[in-house]
Image (cartoon, rainbow, N blue to C red; front, top):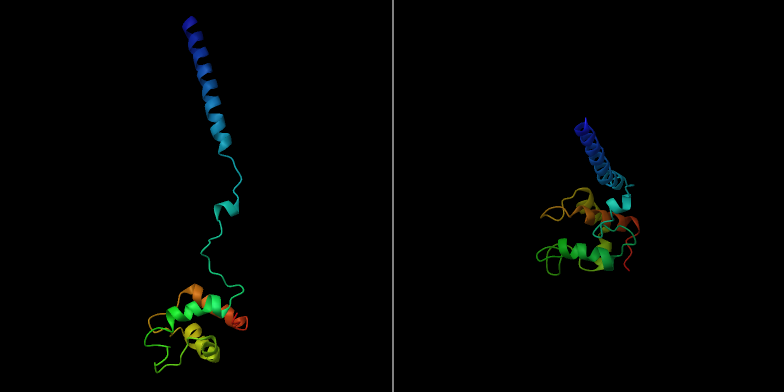
Length: 128
């Protein structure tokens, strides 16, 4: 009987210790998910606000259109190296690059550039 009492006391002490160890673990696992912390804004996200030719659009043309053998001085194709050249062909650019997606011939421009061009044109194609 004395052994049973000692076992019972030992088990109670073990359960009490286990409770004090596990309780903080259970309580610390309860927290409120914060959307901003879980899904922070991507610093490389595509900007489609306040776009200008000089800052945002000119690099798209320099990297995709005004390259050797294409829309540069001396080529048979219309030049697309300056704002005035691009602006004068805005309807054709919209048709070929954004609607048909047949330009550039090496493959369509990336989605962010397409979105930026579309928004820039919708905003009136500002230069600066």
